Amino acid sequence: MTWSIGANRAAAEAAIDHELPSFFGITHKKYGTPVGAAVTLGAAMTAILLIYGFLSGSNEDLFWKLFAASAVIYMLPYIGACLAFYRARRVDPDRPRPYKAPGGDFVALLMTLVCSALLGLSIVLFMYVPGEGFDWPVVIGSVVSILLGEGSPLGPRVGTS
Image (tube, one colour):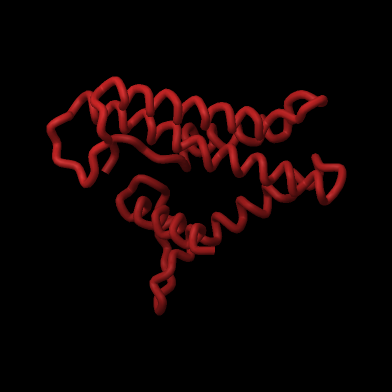
């Protein structure tokens, strides 16, 4: 629940900064909670559950498909965070930071490559079923989620304020 509330609050703040559509920024008059983002999340999750429900043969299959798809979507940004760590280290090495990873550029590159590779491998393993091949509803659902989040008019608008 706290992850949803945090994500809803972040979406509301992004809407206030005109990075997301304004309806994400609707808040409760008394409590200040992000109603627009919460309702949108609820509608999206209901649609996803219904779609995956029609693609699944059983409750167990539905659970594992949703679990795998959400794990893929959850892990993808961490690959970006690993790459951003290395880029920040290369582009602006003298900036004061709250922590510093020891070892110089080689160790930073090694950490970036190992972490990104492990995350990438984990993502592939969530989409692959041994003996059956790729679980295409999970692959397609993950790709569609990425495209909707990054490429749609509802996604973040880079460079606007």
